[in-house]
Amino acid sequence: MHDLAFVFAGFAVGLIVGLTGVGGGSLMTPLLIFFFGVKPHLAIGTDLLFAAFTKMGGSVALARARQIDWPVVLRMAAGSVPAALATLYVLGRVGPAQPAVQHVMTLTLGAALLLTAAATFYKAVRGGKTPQPAPGDVAEAARSRHPVLTVLFGAAIGTLVTLSSVGAGAIGVLVLMLLYPMLPLRRIVAADIAHAVPLTLVAGLGHASIGSVDWALLLKLLAGSLPGIWLGTLLVRRAPERLIRSLLSVLLAYAGAKLITL
Image (cartoon, rainbow, N blue to C red):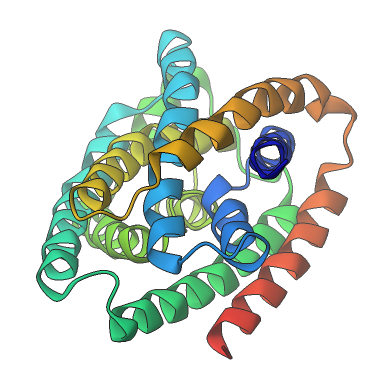
């Protein structure tokens, strides 16, 4: 019965991700901690690989459709992947199961959820108001006037994601919206999804190397999430996206505040 509950949780999170694009980490990690009682370091490590595998298929489809601006992805990854490796090195040295480390990870997760709630609400309010440049101007829109800022923000996201499994989704999209204001929203989302794959894969495998991944739990979650995402993408046009995003932002803010006050 417990196994079916994990599969159903994966399905529910996959469905919401398919409907709204909100990162699975911001939903799955607090669900595993609060509802199933999974230790924070195991919930975070398992969810990182959960995110990597679920977003891998989406990246392949987006790459085939030529929706990904790879220079943007590479700039973000130039900061996020080294930052993730450095964070993993520190975690490996001090031990992820240590009470002090668990406390830091819980606080980081709470702060990340509050940031994600704000980013999700911002996207719900802003909606589809992103400028739409002409096809010939898309390459120009993908050029950053301050490429170093993209790398630095990528490093911040890499550290945040490795410590909390949250941030590669809504926060990543918000950062790209600020750094590349003329890039169409669909291409911003595509770049964010593509960037999340190597980041969460590196961070997830790093967590696995220090014993912070529950492989059996991962398989159960994926068994539910893959059909959930498929169904969510079919229903996305009929769903009241702004309402769902607004409600999710309230839920994420509540979970973040609760984690910080534990």
